[in-house]
Image 1 (tube, rainbow over the protein chains, first blue to last red):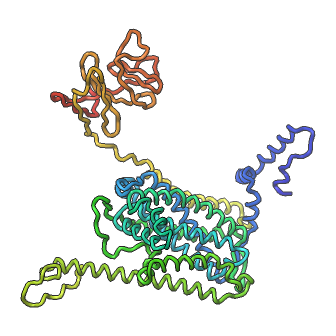
Image 2 (spheres, rainbow over the protein chains, first blue to last red):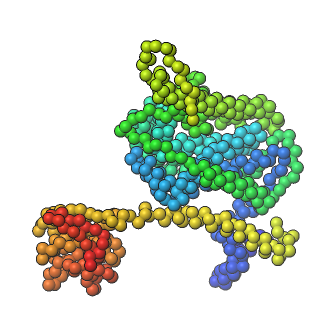
Image 3 (cartoon, helix red, strand yellow):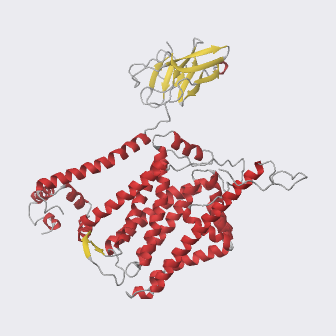
Length: 410
Length: 157
C-alpha cells in the first residue's frame, strides 16, 4: 500500500471519525514526509528516488552542470547581500562599493566571492556546454533541454556584461562603452539597439541604472525560471549516455550520486573561497563623468569575452556581429541539424565542429591576452621614454642622436 | 543507504554528518550576520549642528536641524528662552513638532506634539501623563555666540 492510498478517507457514515483517522495517520508519518504530502511532492520524491545515474568513462563531465548550479546559488546569495549596500547611481556606485570593501564587516569577502564566483560560473558553464556538445547529449529527447541551456548561457554572459559596469570604475566604464558600441554596427537596428542598452547617447548614469535593472531584475527572473526548467528536465530525462559508450554500472541518484556530487560541490566552493580570500577582487579608480580621462593601457573585457574582442581586431564589426549571430543560431539548432546523433549514430562531423569551436575560443583568447600584454609593455616603455631626459617626449636637441629609450624597469 | 549498518553506528555517522554541516554553516551565518548588521559606524560623537537664533521668529518659533541623521528641534519658547530637544518621539519614533498651544489643552499650554499617536510633552519636554509617550524628550546643550547657535548631542545638565 502506498502512503497516498493509506491517507484516502475510508467510506464511512461518520465523517468526523474519518478526519480523526486521517489526522492520526498523518501524525504517524515523519515530518519530512508530511511536508511532502502537503506540497503534493510525493510523486517528485518517488521519481528522484527511482532515478539512477549511468557510470561510464565520460561520466565525470556530469559534475560540470551541478557545479555551475552551485556557483549560480552563490551568485544569488552574495548578489542579494551586495544589494543591501550598493547604490546604483553614477555618483553613489563607486562610493558604495568602496564602502562595502572598506567599512562593512566582511563586505570585501562577499564582493570578492561574488566576482570570483561569476568567473567560476562562466568557466564551469563553458565546460558543461562543450562537454554536453561533444557527448551529443542534445540529441532526442533533450532538444528543449539544450535550448534552455543555450538561453542560460546567453543570460549568464548578460549577467557578466551588465555586472561589469556596476562598480563604476574606469575599466568598467570603458569596457561598457566599447561593449555598447558594437551593436551600432548592425544595419538598420544598430542605433536603436545601442540606445536601448545605454538609455542615453553616451554611457552615463542612465546606462548604469539600466544595466543594474537588467542585472538584478530581469536576468535573475529569467535565469531562475530557466534553471528550474533545465534541472527539472535533467531529473526527468536522466543523464545522457554518449552513443557507443559502455555503461559500467548505474548508481542510485539519491543518496549515492548526490553524496559524491556534494563532495565536488564542497571542493568547488572551497577553491572559490580560498581564491576569493587570497586574491580579493580589486576596485579601480572611480570614473568621473564630468572629468573625462583616456582609458588605462591594455584595457580589455573579462576573459570570457576576449575571443569576441580579438575577433573585432580582424574583421569589421558588422561581420563579427552577423557572424556570431549565425554561429549562435547554428549552435541552438544543433539537435535538429545533427541528423546522425538524432538517430543514435556516431557523429564525427559534429565532434569536429565542437573541437574547432573550442580551438577558436582558446586560440583567440590566448592571442588577445598576448596583444594586451604587448600594449601594456609598449605603454610602460612610452612612459619611461617620456620621463627620460632624451626620450621622444621632448624635442630632440641638436647634437648626437638620441639614445634609445631604456628598457622598461619594474 | 544506511540499512546494512548497525543502528548504533548509524547514529554516530548521522551525528558526524550533522556536526560537519553545522561546522560548515555556522561561519557563513556569522559572516552574513556581521555583514548585515553594519550601521555605518556609531557616527561622529562630536558632530554639531549650526543655525542662527534669528531664524526663530514669533511666526516660526521652532526649527529642525539634524546631527548624524537624528532630527533635533530648536525652539524659542513663550518665555523667549531658546531650548533644543531630540525631536524623536519616545513612543514609536515619529518626529514631534512644537505647538504654542497644544491641541485640546485646558488651560491652553505650549509644548511638543506628535501627530502619529497624539503624544504630548510639556514645554520642558516632559511627557504628559495619559498620552502615549513613556519618557521625556532629551534636552540638548548648545552654545550661543550672538545669533550663532551651535547644538551638540550632549544632554543639557
